[in-house]
Amino acid sequence: MGLGKLLDFTGQVVLVTGGTKGIGATVAAAFLGAGADVVVCGRTTPDTLPAAGGREAVFVPADVRDPAAASAVVDAAVERFGRLDVLVNNAGGSPDADAATVSPRFVEKVIALNLLAPFYVAQAAHRVMRAQEGGGSVINIGSVSGQDPQPGTAAYTAAKAGLLALTKALALEWAPAVRVNHITTGPVRTESAASVYGSDGGAAVAGVIPMARMAVPADVAHACLFLAGGLSGYVNGADLAVHGGGEFPARYLATKAAEAARADGGPAR
Image 1 (cartoon, rainbow, N blue to C red):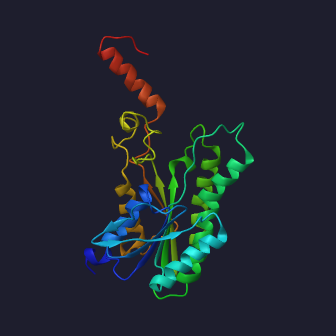
Image 2 (image 1 turned 30 degrees about the horizontal axis):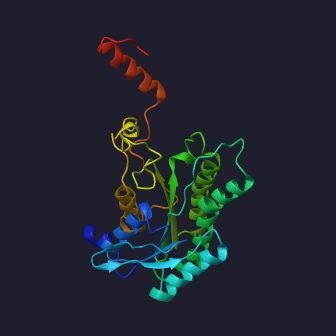
Image 3 (image 1 turned 135 degrees about the vertical axis):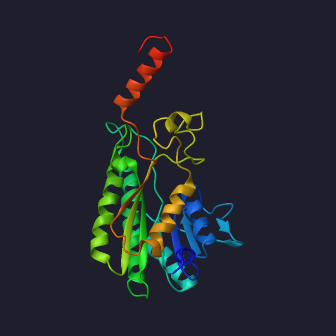
């Protein structure tokens, strides 16, 4: 089979949670461009929908933290297109919060969105995928925070660490009909994340990444195409790192800064 055919999703149906903006919208557009029929969901109706190749994603309103809503969005995709081949659990995120004072309600919401919701949607998708010819693929979008915590992200870190563990558990239980894989994303340049990474467009953050740039949503979308298609037919329970090599250790950065200062004739700090 040719390489192009392995990346051709014509006749396949893809569901992207949180697929109306940011990374999710780019993932949805990538699958549309590869020939798939795509369903996206979110809590609010977007002004525009992901589109590519003259086709547009189908929007289903849903708060996937609710198990009934998670099941209903899968049902809606199957009712519209007759099957479901790929689920991308992309919905997630959290503002920073002080772990010492954060409210129980905040913690519950973060865990619900980043861990429980992917579980609920995956369960509903599995019921469809296991019974259809060709099975299916589930891709969970995680974060480096799940393995390398940052201050202010305690609840988010716990949820994302759980998502990686959940991925491996489901991969064991659901193979060979349904493959379940995980993507660990690093800092990604999106409109909603601009305030997080500073007014310099992320230049300072890029300086600590071996690839010398932050990821863009297309980097994550391309990884999704790989994990969903025939090129990864034997990949199951994997964690694909899309983080540019991680971050240089603080000790290394401090040493380089001191060397640069000495080279400029200034004091090492």
